[in-house]
Amino acid sequence: MKHHAPRFLALVNTARESVREMTVQQVRNFQIEGKKQILVDVREDHEWAEGHLPGAVHLGKGIIERDIEGLFPDLNEELILYCGGGFRSVLTAENLQKMGYTRIVSMDGGYRGWTEAGFPVDKP
Image (cartoon, rainbow, N blue to C red):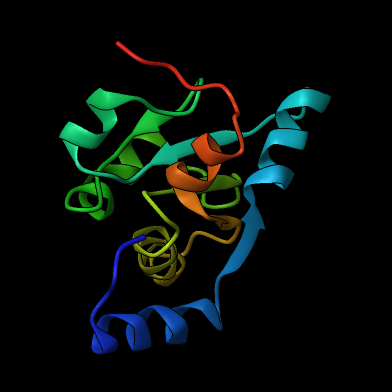
């Protein structure tokens, strides 16, 4: 488990107040039930290359605000964001909400929680 700086955690906790979150189990249940979901991996390129959730799209946190509208122009489409542990995705979700996206979700636990639960991943 990573130890994060106090100011970073304060920023994440403030963002959590306005961002909808789902657990890794809830996201997995959606997959099992065949519900439509768009998973967006906001991790760094090297993290994505090591493995990612099946069917996910990669838009790293450094570029997502710049590129999101080109891929997902519908501001009402539900997008489930995830990162390594659920921190960066919360911050990204908050920014996308500020851009007008209305159905943004952050996956609490992130890729780490997903793999610890033994759920499937795509690897190169």
